[in-house]
Length: 282
View 1 (cartoon, rainbow, N blue to C red):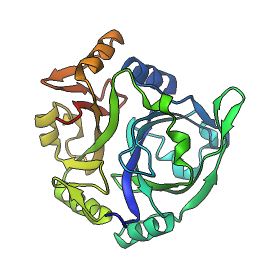
View 2: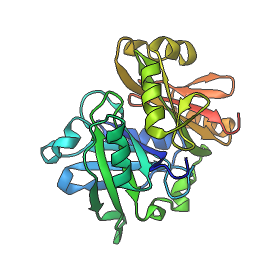
View 3: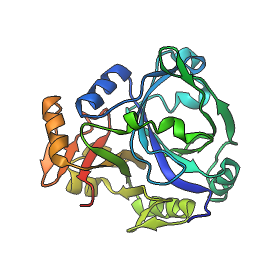
View 4: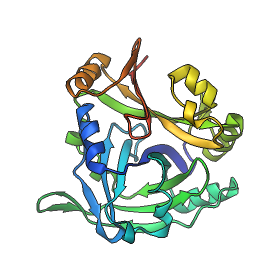
């Protein structure tokens, strides 16, 4: 909906224990990464895998996040950066953070108040930018999510960061497993005020909630999540050329599976995430 406070699934906060190892994998898969960013007061480091935005005013990316100093982690981030690796929060793009907060609480989620943040981001030796945003910290629910309102999204959209050897175009959607998929599809459809093809979606990026049995049948993955109330399984990325993607994976010696024109990176390789690559337009 054009006037809904939540406009898009903007990015996925993905917890990895070893940021250097995760960055190496993504580079070997053919991705360009943003320079490492260290948020010293919080003891957090990250790399961004930035792709083409699907909705104007927002971004489209995978955030690889680790803690380099757990003694500095804010209490709200201890749960996020702990336990199993993988997607820990679906970050929603908000047109207005206060209004997005109102939508979340009206939908029955215990969301904290938005916090205004402005921080230094060192992007090269001697070169810094200062992104500014309103953020709602992750809501504590089995399919955790939070929200972000950008004031200067252009800082994230440098052309050199959006170009990938594997021809990645954009994050298309998010996969989750649940014991009661219909419940979670209904909850997020209400939160987003809409969907596409039966999947909750606030914009162009969708959320597909399925059973563990369906995940095993469709993707050959998810057996170990049988019985979980709800948990993120991974995500789908659209590429312009499956052939170019496969060339990158083979050159980078990244183990993968091919099923027709779809390529899979299994969770044990993808730092807890099933990564599905599909050629754009198919």
